[in-house]
Length: 279
Ligand SMILES: [Zn+2]
Image (cartoon, rainbow, N blue to C red; front, side):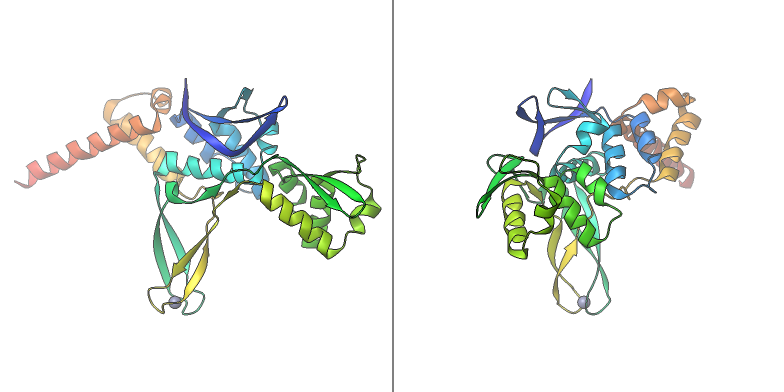
């Protein structure tokens, strides 16, 4: 039995076809516990692979594993993290913005399901670019690419990205000289084509500061799991154990929604007994 299914904006290239259907595991307490234990010290791309490996059941016909999750394009990984946030914390999220002008902090109410995204362009994940006498085959960047250049300087990361995403030049693997000899205008043309074929998920919102009225861009971080709280999670397990005298294994076997339903019932009955005591 699996949980929610989503259609990826891009998809996984597997055995010659693009597989876009991703299935999450059933969100039990065990899955949430594994998420809480994910190593937040890892570089972001590696962390996201670890998180998605905990929660995903399959991508198309492929059982989800860290290799195929690393092979997903960047937007697919953002999209899956966004859907995971909705599964655990609901569609509504509060975005905390620090105004760029007056230093005021304000909250924006954003619905995850309302954030726009763009589906992959034709030919995804590959594209062909003609640069003078050269014909380049390009591939959209993946989580594995991000993992490779996470710790590099911007200049090194760009070189690394070009090296990985230009898969062939005139049907041959690109040489180091070719990559290093690319002009700025060539790099811009490569970037433009990759943008065209890559899917995209909204990562920036136009917001207005209620204090000073300045219109500005607010960044969305789809990779943060800040809605997960270790203390609250174990407090819920503890509450159910104390109230119903269930074992930890039984409680962790409950789905997220069922656990919350019981917690709500306990809170309600305790609220009722407080009301009774007050009368
Ligand atoms: Zn302001």
